[in-house]
Length: 187
Length: 187
DNA sequence: AGAAACATGTAATAGGTTACATGATTTC
DNA sequence: GAAATCATGTAACCTATTACATGTTTCT
Image (cartoon, rainbow over all chains, first blue to last red; front, side, top):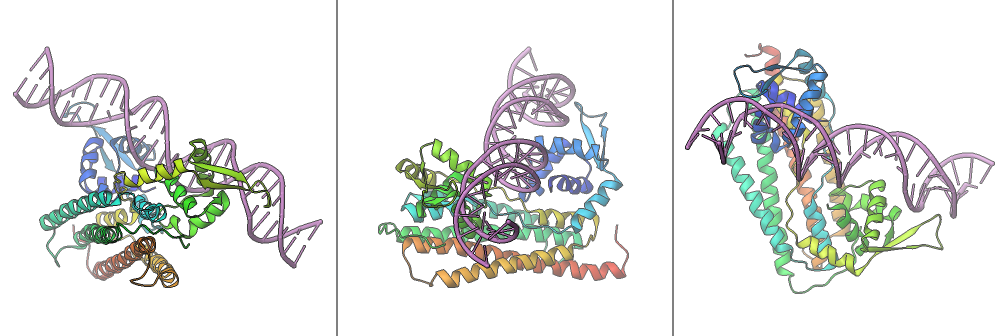
């Protein structure tokens, strides 16, 4: 259950309405924990019911805009959660199954798929590198800044890894394109 | 919707009962697409209804054991699916939120959490390396074997990346931890 | 006879996605 | 006055997780 705590974190960084939160999420936390506006509204209502945040109607703004801020109970809950052990989520990587399926039933035109993936990861890497160049200077910064930089670097490393992987896969598929010898799979 | 195709792939590699499939899954495909036995039984029933697999009761076996095999329609569906474009799943990495939360509300005892993660990734890496040493010889093998090896290498690279990441994070937390012990927290 | 492993399911719940619904304010 | 954008939600559906339920065979 990370979404409530992701929202708490974002609200500690800056009190916001659900709408603003959704917009900010897309530009930062969503890289590692995406959430739709429906999820965010639902979760904010739960957080308020739990007494972790408080909403106040923003009078000099349009519509029924509500601004949420984190209460002390919410901060404490967040600190407790951070210290809890956290298992990595099980991976779910469709591409790996496709590679294995291709290995099992013979060439199925995976190159196209891999080229798209390669392009996607290159675009994402470029985005991360632009953020890094804009927001961080190497070797300097407070504890908080260094931690935020580290999170970004994880994204950079992951994209770099997938780019290398896609290229390796393309190499194999291109080489072996004609000799379609399929054998039984080991476990 | 990868699970049905993951099951088709496993069944192309070898016809099996749901129980056997679940056991084999745990040792191979589940590294990139985990599934419980409940999911597997449900999905096998759907695959059969769709006419992609056929089950036959295994007479000289215990219980109501049913062996599934892939029909031609299933093979074709699998080939079509492989050629479809596949977006990477959105990441959901709790640890990143914790790092960001720790940056936002101050030190919360993340070291312990990171040490556990580090140990987990080291164990997983060791498992992958053991499989690699057992099943693959570098530079040799059929197309299918090289693709399977590549999938395993992706696992190895990911674990290696997370090990490096955990160490970097610990470095930052340990450094800043000493500082926080001797100096007052800045505003 | 009892335990362990084999084998197949159902039910309840939580989390996430997609589509739909509603209304206010600003801008042209 | 129409369109775009701001702003907050509901409903239906699907997937995945967890817990529960049931019966068989093999081994000791």
